[in-house]
Image 1 (tube, helix red, strand yellow):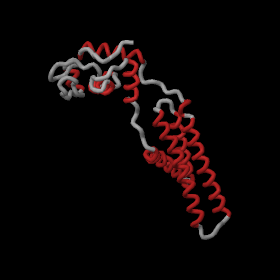
Image 2: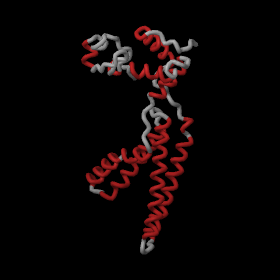
Image 3: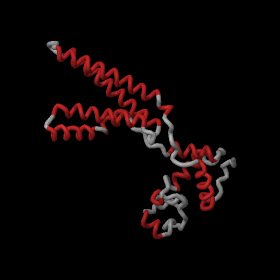
Image 4: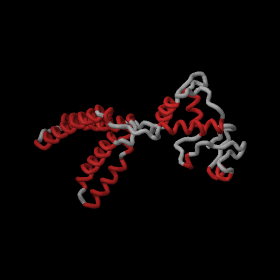
Length: 223
């Protein structure tokens, strides 16, 4: 973790031995993730510099609170990454099917686990809205792939059997349903309550502590 004053990198052992100070300049650290903080001094300082546009704009503690909340958001995962990152679930399903000696069930079990995972992710309160949206879009992507695959395979069949026609209808129905369900999950995102990572009152305490160590923040407005 870098010192905000001299930019010297200090590992946990060095910070601990120095009593929570920089090993180079003896400057105290205000925030330490290893001590329970969600961010570092550099992060907090950069947040102040960014929201004030390099000390040219004024801001309120509430604005800083929202700004830090936004910066702490979990990085977005694209729909395709969501799908492929869930591949380990399919591997688990394969092992279950093999252990039960019902190999034909493996794809079905894997599919159900994957869809259940994506549905859970699309409405999990602990995720930020953008990440939940990505989970919902992943459901749409899977539905679209199933729909497209069903159409392609149907027209590639040399002979049309009752089984092939049934699987075609099943694929079309499942694909349309998943696209619809993913769209529905997208439409309810604004209704899912989003808990903040920390209380607004904490930003006041952090600012007070920060100014005790690093000097007055002249661009913050009192409310």
